[in-house]
Length: 327
Image (cartoon, rainbow, N blue to C red; front, side, top):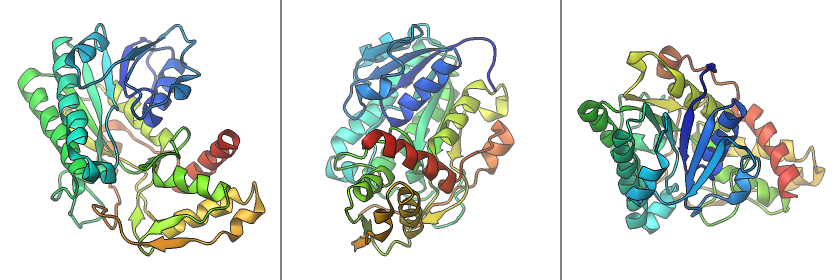
C-alpha cells in the first residue's frame, strides 16, 4: 500500500483519538505530518511519540479561523480532516458550537485546500448520516433524515465536498466512520465514547450503565481498520474511487449486551473480580438509532479495503492498551 514517494500530510484534529493514531502511522512510514489542533477535545499526551520526530510539525490553531487553515495547508499534498466536535448528545445540548466547528470549520478547510491546490482532501464523515433509514446493511447511496444536529453537520460536509469536487476540481473522499474504538480513545468527560467509558468503569469495579435494554446494535470498528481506509483513500489512483463517500466499518454488528460481555471477559483476564460486576440499564438516549450495520462492498471494490480487526480482535488489543495505560 505504501508508495516510495514521501508525502506531506495535514491531519486536522491530529491530537485527537483518530488523528493521533493517523499521525503516528504516517510518520512511521516516513511521511511528513502537520497536525492542526486547538486542543478542545484532543490531548498533547496523544502526540508524545510524534513530537520528537523531525518530520512532525504541530500548529496550534482552530479550523473556525480561515487564516489558521491557510497556514496549515501550505505545501501540503493531502489533507486528512478529522477535526470536529463529535457526540450526538453534545450537539443536542449545544447545536451552535457543533455547527460552527463541523460546518463552518469544514468549509474553511475546503476553501484553504482548494486555494493551496491540495491534491486530495479525505474527511471524517459519519454513520449518523443514515438517520432514520431502517434498511440494513447501510449502503452509501441510501440515507434517511438526520436524527440530531450532529448528523446534520456531517451530512452537510458531504454536500459541500461534492460541490467543491464538481465546481473547483478538488478531489475529496468522505469516510463514514462507524463507532470507531481503540487505543488513545478518551474515557473521560461527559461525552466519552461507550467503549473507553465502560472499560474505565469496569476497571474501577463500577457498574456500566447501558442506555435501553442493551439490544441496540452497532458496527464497532477498530482504529486500525480506519487507518487502513484513510491510507487507501489517500493512495488510490482509481478515478472512479474519488469524489464519493465510503462506509468505514468492519461489516458486522454486535449488541451493547454483547459488547459488555466481551469487555468483562477480556478485562477479567487481568482481574478475575471484574467478571462479577453487574450491568445497570437506563433509558434510551435521544437521537440514537436502534441498529447500525455497514455494507463495506463499495470500499472493497473501489479501494481494495480488507478490514483486519473484528470487534473481538480489536477489543483484545484495546483492553490491553487501557490496562497498561490507565492503571
